[in-house]
Length: 255
Image (cartoon, rainbow, N blue to C red):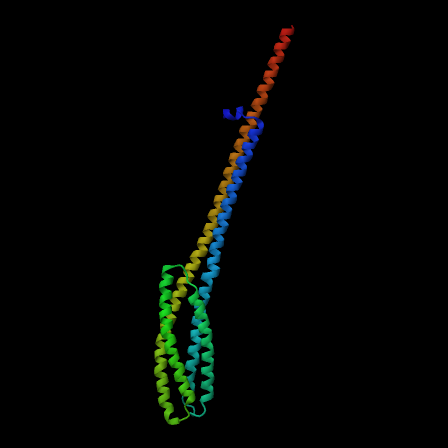
């Protein structure tokens, strides 16, 4: 490297420092990019995917609760018509209260969406099945109210027959809603796990890149340091030889 021999010591040290600083800046930039990518993935998981998982799980849990309250009415069908008003009325109040929680969870569900084609398709199915299930649920509540309002034993059998017919419709739509919720929950979970795996793999890749860049910068720095030291040594040696030669010439001339 003849150009190093022609450079002064200050220039050589500046060049070495510049290489090291540039390498460190490159490592810093790569690190910032990697951290930002990891933060974006974690925010997607925390702000969208996990809430969606919890919403779907909560909707299915609440669906079972309101269904259980409706099925509990059957235990009173053989009671005296004048005695079932209060217990069935309590069940109806509990169901209406639980549906307030269902409606709140549903609003949260509608407000968020995952950027995945299959999730969007399954989400559309859930919305459609929810609308049908919610519509027939109103008929169940109407049928429960008829049981509460009745005090005529002669009408009780017909009222419960109508109630059973309504519940049959509800059971079919409730099962369809559960099926769609389960399919969406499975897909959202898979997408979330894929995102977690990708975030971990991306973190590993950036770590490998940083290590490789650091190793490269270190190798280049060591190589330049060796070359600079050798060029400095050569300069000093050449200077000493020149001085020695000049001294010899002076001594020879003096003789």
